[in-house]
Amino acid sequence: MMKLKTGVLLIATALLAGCSSEAAVQAVPEPIALTEEAAGHYCQMVILEHEGPKAQMHLAGIQHPLWFSQVRDGLAYFKSPEQSADIAVMYVNDMGKAKSWSEPGEMNWIRADEAYFVVGSNKKGGMGAPELAPFSTEDKALEFAQSFGGEVQRLDEISMQAVLAPVDVELEDES
Image (tube, rainbow, N blue to C red; front, side):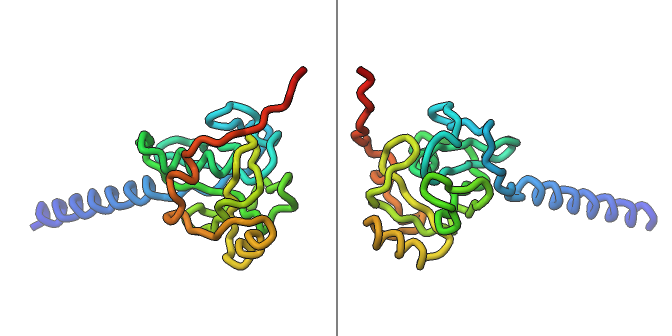
């Protein structure tokens, strides 16, 4: 009888350990403050040197997030057919809480899957391409769209074309 109780106890402990380690693996990382050290995943430029909202992507099993100079770039990574990483969570700046377009904030992050995005506005992102402006509330997104054009969409409504299509970007004349 004692061996049976010990066996059951060992099995129960193993199951609980498996559940708790699974829960730890599935825990969603918190957003990280935007600092001078943050460099864009695609461009390797300092994120703070660019205007507009930013994105940070947390991949499963990787301690530091991928940073994106534009939300559009983060969504391009997320929606890319070649992307195979296990994404734990993506955060974007809440532009409803930003000081201005040029100062989106270091810690006003919202989950991308909970955001309202203005797609097709006349605002440009940090790399000069059209930008998708994220907001935590639909009212703020609608207000932005009324001022700068575009339409409000949720993450699953944003087409791949909206984030992957090539864009013409005017380059400064260096002569």
